[in-house]
Length: 116
Length: 109
Image (cartoon, rainbow over the protein chains, first blue to last red):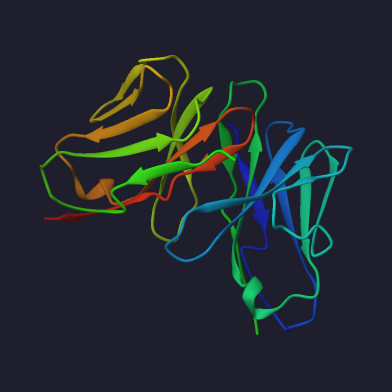
């Protein structure tokens, strides 16, 4: 149980275009999901907390107009990178909190974004 | 905000030896979690510690949570090649996780 999927697993896009990444909890409902980015050989940095039915909460320094988050259902959150630039190239990972448990989060397989 | 420091950043271990990775938080935590990320993979939940002074074991892995709930350690005994990867601690005071920098482990056969 507690499986989280992410789509796509990798994407290459041109500078100035937008990219949407989906995060799904497959066998549990998640009112709260999280979006992280990870640069090579670095740790995970929390970008935002996605709340079902309400606005996302962004971490300091993360542009909410650039990284649009929508959590329209209890099993799906999306992250849209708008007007992507090469510096947005990174590994984006989502996680979902299984509220049947305690505090643990389950991570998706990640999406590798390359902006050319 | 909350910061979690983790050392060492890299650990090169001879197969069969033991090693420990340490985490320290700038604030008291409600819980700490440990994750393992294999090269090219995503973090996989290992364990969570909630109680002050808690010790948990998973086969060759021993996890500890300090009395003050500000530090934690992961000790691996008799390292195997399957232990290769990056181990992250992640501290939490609510539902948000603050990740340490990770300890990347390589094993010499």
